[in-house]
Length: 519
Image 1 (cartoon, helix red, strand yellow):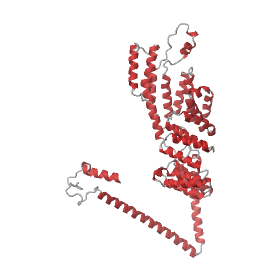
Image 2 (image 1 turned 120 degrees about the horizontal axis):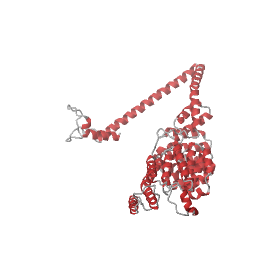
Image 3 (image 1 turned 90 degrees about the horizontal axis):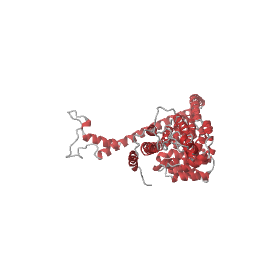
Image 4 (image 1 turned 135 degrees about the horizontal axis):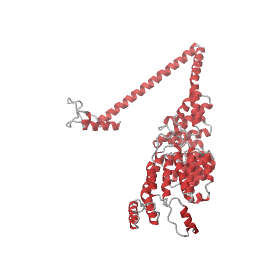
């Protein structure tokens, strides 16, 4: 599609010249004439609103790109949901620029004065409807919507709800605009947890109108409400419709991924596989692309689980997947758990914890799975660090958050007493042993301590050798001035009697920068 963005400034000037030709530039908004309405409508669209809409779209794309989430757990339908449970530290956000532009458009170009009435207008339904309007700039509702949506994506849901409520009243005689505002109100209610209020408002929206004009928004609002209410099976058909209508490619991929997760939980494997395939078809970022492929492999594991688990472990050895090894081992551990191979599952979860580079959601999920296994075995001393690590990492909106934090608190208190009991039992057992056996146990402990000390010393020596090798390589590359390598070249003074400051010597600065970058 041809890009017409460069034409907007020209069109804006053309609108002003046209308005001047009509002799309306000196007309105030109180003079509600056809020429004045044309001028304000045109200027709103191609001047203030254009800039505000561009700011909104840029902020929305930035929000999607900067949002990080763990794809091993159920993701949110909209990234802004992650902020719904958090208290706002300050007012405002990335969408403030769009709000300013939207309010400016409303302030400068709103037309509220009733137009002059022609004789016999009461007998013309169109004239009656026109007289019943409260806003005569036919494009201004877009500026109002821009303000409300920007407040919504700033996570200022209460203020956004108030804005959309006002829009619904202002355009009460225009069903399409009124119902769009009400649907955004439903979304605000859902994000704030006011699900009953949202349901009552949905019942006031005619179902045929949103389905024909605002099908995507209607489906998204209903699906969001069902998901946040825990009725995920009911959300599936609406989520499928909303994903098909979503225009942003990244968000569409996210919605299809969530659809696949819900279908997978419902054991609708073939439909889930199709949803993940659509994620890949949207060419999402690497993290989401990899997660969709991983979920498809999990679906394939229903036929041959051990083969898929071994394939995942081979993937983890490739450098390409170094930063997602915790996801890989978490999936492998779940597959082993599905075939009751607890020993292999423990190994996979431990590997996921050890090799995690981000210490994010997947790291926490590995800790939780491992902690649950230890709890079933009543190995409380082993379970305690798992739940303690998970509680500090897990998202507060995660369904397991409350259970994990409670277990972590209880185990922290229990472990102190359990360690005392364990130590006392060990000492009593050791004291009750025959002397020869007791000495053998003591010797084995001493031997293990000596081996650990030797291993630590060897690691320190290896580290020292590596540092020496790096220093030698640096010297070989000329990063350190060597008298035999730099004969005939000006030498940078190491210490000067003049007290020359280091940062005044360009050669020393260049050498230091190169050495720093190498390290």
